[in-house]
Length: 528
Image (tube, rainbow, N blue to C red; front, side, top):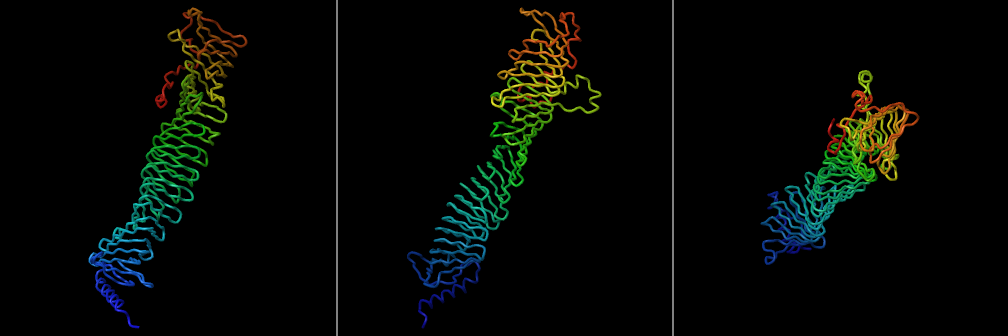
C-alpha cells in the first residue's frame, strides 16, 4: 500500500523539524504525531499536531518529553499548548499529568492545569494548577495542593517546590499529617531529604504525648525534636511549658525552656517561673533556675516560693517541690526564709531547712550566728524560727492547719507600746495550730524561757516577766500574742522596767531579722 499524501507531508515535516531544530538544543523537537494541520484564523503561525488511533503527540525539549492528544506548536515562539491527557516526563526523576499545559521553550516555564499530578521518586503532588520553571528547578501552585512523601501527607493552599534543594515552601493553611504527629502552620519550609521543617507564623504540632505552639521554629519531623520561639509553649505530661525559646526531644522525653519561662501544672493549678527550665518526662521532674519562682494556691491565696533552684518531681497527683539555696516565701499574711524547702502535695506539708554546718563552723560560730542560719517565718507581727520548720495544710480546704518548729524554737514579737522592747519565747520545740488560716495557739515545750512585757488594762506597763518553765501555751488574737499560760510551776519574776539591766532584755540567741523579711514579690529576689 502506498503511503498517503498526508502522511508523506507529515513525515517530511517531522524530518525537517528534527534536522533544523536539532541544531539548537533549546528548540522544541517534534518526535511524533498522528496528524499535522494549520488554522491561521484561530491559531496564526501555529502547527496543530493531533493524535490518531495509535500515535500520540510527542514533543521533546531539553530532556523533557511531553505527550498529549493535541498540541498547538508555535515554531517561531518556540512554545506550545497541549491538551488531552498531557504527560510531562523528565528522565526517571519527574512525571506529571494534567488536562492542559502551556510551555515556553525559551524560558523553560510551563503551566499545567486540570487535575495535576506530579510524581518524583520521593513524593507526589496533587493540585489544580501547577507552574514549572525548569531553569530554576522550581514548581509552585496557588490552588490547594496535597503532597505525599514516604510517611507524611502535606497540604496547603499555596506551595513552592525547589527541586534542586528538595525543599517545599508552603504558605496559607499548611497541614502535615503523620502517623505520630500533625503540624498546622501559616508558613512552613520542608526539606524532604532531611525531614526538617522550618516554621513561620502561628504553628501547632500535636503528637501522641505532646502539643506544641510557636510562631517561629524548627522541627525535625523524622526524630520528633525541635527548637521553638515567639510565644512558644508545650503541653507535656499535664504541664504547660512556656518560654522565649523552647527545645524539645520526644525520644529522650526531654524539654527545656529559656527566658521568661513558665511551667504550669494543669492539675494542681500551680506555676513555676524562671529564666531556665528543664523537664524530664520519664522522671516526672522539672528543674527551674535563674530567678525561679513557684506559685501555689493556699487558702484561696497565692503562696510565692523563690529559690536559686526549684525542682518539681512526681506526677501531678503526687507532686513534690524542692527549693535549694536562698529560699524565700511570701503570702498575704505569711513570710519566710530558709536555705532549702520541701513541699509535699500529697500530705500538704511544707518544710523549711537550714544549710548544714561544717565542722569548722560549729567550732567558731557564735550562738547568734548559728541562729541566723535557722529558717524563719513571720506571721503578721510574730517572728518564729528554729532549726527546722514544718507547716501542714488541710488537703480538702487547702488552708494552713498546723505548725511545728524543732530545735531552738524562737518566737519574737516587737512590743507595741515600748520603743525597743521585744516579747520573746524560746524552747526546744513548738507546736501550733491555725483557725481559719490565722494562728490560734502555740505550745512551746522543753527548756522554755519567756521574756514578756506586762500591761494593765489602762495600758500602763506593770513590768517585764522573765520566766523559766517546762512548757507554756500561747493564745493569739488577730495574729498577735494575747495570753500566755504556763504548765507546771514556772520559775520567774516580774521585774520593774527601770530595774532590769538593758543587757538582760534579750534571751540568748535573740536575733530580730526584720531586715530579711520579704514584703513584696520583688523583694523575694533581693539577696540579704
